[in-house]
Image (cartoon, rainbow over all chains, first blue to last red):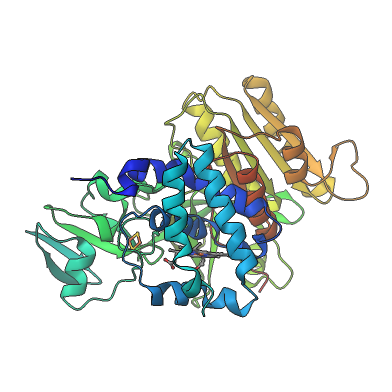
Length: 122
Length: 322
Ligand code: HEM
Ligand code: FES
């Protein structure tokens, strides 16, 4: 049986290692951190784990509709392609930092990219 | 098959389904989102029974310790009584005020004697019930070994509960509390870890408890406590904290004044002074309490300075001026 991308990258342990790194980059980035100023940072942190699990092809039950709903309030506040690109950049940088091979990073990026329309509500 | 009791109703849970699936199959509507154990939307607490460790993955150690788990990844063969996280109805306990003293002109120290056994950890909080139904949260400053519940009550402008406690309450009076709530306490699993404690105003209460709990349990890492206030007369427990630094070489106390005149104390806001002194917090644990905006911004700043998210503790309630 062939391993899924999620398994190849290291499964949940890899996501755990990635989530702090990734979220630190996002919060430090003035292009997008205005979307992450909610008072409940702990909850948001957990959601970034859900994001990474999904981008790495791990188990989740989000549909495109869920992605629209989860980001709809951000679209109202101006979420656009440039913000999406910034998140993609941090995803790539995080995985590079963790030593994930370029080919697998490409696969993760493609999964994340496939949600663009839903996340941006188009 | 296990029986899961939720909101007073018993639900059956088969071996091949999760607690979340079992509840939904039988018509309950607990919140959920990812259904794969990462978003924490479905977090619950086992009020009776022990959740399997697998269902506690990714939760803070202090939450694991208190029986919180994720319903969407919880498969169990033992019976449990569960409640939604944040919505756990804990029984009220009657307490008697045994002493009422001033810590400074605007802060009271209330010591309460529970009428029945009351479990808590220093740094957790309780809800105080005024007989007319008004409820406010206060952090616990005492240690379980002291046997009493100590609160520090700052008099707030228009603060209904704080004014009542300051003006009307006397030793011998009784009221109800419920709790203990919150995951902001010392667990003792990492005795070598450095600890950063930052509080403003009566946010010192839980930190005074947590620091002493850590020292009581023989914590070996450095413990740095920063207490901020606007002026010297709003600081409190200064002598006690200075005494603690003399008794324990790994305990450090920095009172900070944010007003124009620092009156010989460290000048600046406690959170800013602390992060200037410790710009890299990799591997530290952090405890924050006090002004909600300070707590929220400092959470972010400590995380950006390298502290892991699971290692940043703050009680969720905000101080109400109403
Ligand atoms: C790259 C593709 C993206 C994916 C796959 C994705 C995925 C997710 C997921 C799974 C959640 C959790 C939803 C829930 O359980 O409620 C979430 C929440 C969130 N996402 Fe995204 N996301 C993406 C892009 C973005 C972008 C570009 C931004 C903003 C710059 C963003 C900001 C947020 C915020 C702020 C939340 C938390 C909302 C809340 O607190 O309820 N996301 N995302
Ligand atoms: S629903 Fe996301 S952790 Fe359970």
